[in-house]
Length: 279
Image (cartoon, rainbow, N blue to C red; front, side, top):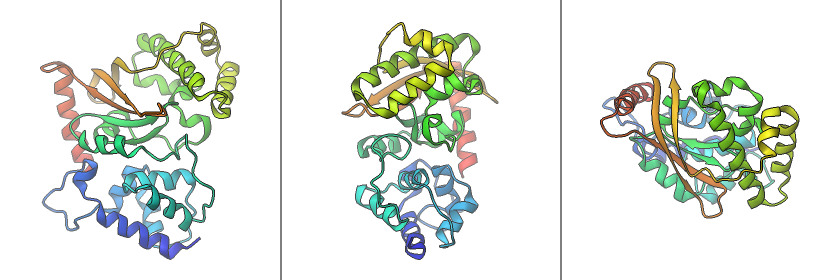
């Protein structure tokens, strides 16, 4: 691993990204044109201390998932992303799916334009790849998980605390939608071992999932109405929209409130709070 070159490359890419490119406020006190270290860390879901150690060239061993998150936070293109992996001595090409997947540039460009509404990019297995500041303020940072647990679908049926984001009376609806969407993914990917293992594990661990899976309902999740529980603002009633990549493997999600609604006012408060937290 070439730690000094890895550190220098990270610094050079950080200096290149402007705050407005990633939906961050510029602010009058900003002394550097690019991102601060703590901002890169927050965008990548890392601790500021960990990222600082990387930029200092100390003996940190970043995982594939960490490198992928940094590539997204720093808006690296495909060649730059591969270079980052090579500097970290990761010679195996990154996976096409999962949390280490490279975000489609078109979706990432659109995400950068959606600074006034919560938005995120996920895989077809609901693994978060990137999200803007408002999505972080609404949902919290993506959990630093690997394997099946990185999927929100998997966590929904195996970790009941993941359901606290929605009111209990809405849980059956989300369960049905998750399972119908996963069945569509299973057919589209063919005999993908990642999906096959996930389905088998969910059938084993969740009677609810097994019963819903056996209904054979199928529907791609393109739009939905969500009631989201926020610890400070209460329940926000939002419409969730979805834009799929050409191959269907990634999705851009964004949430909106009806004009003049209570949720619209709540989003305005979230915007203020989110910007204050990121500034």
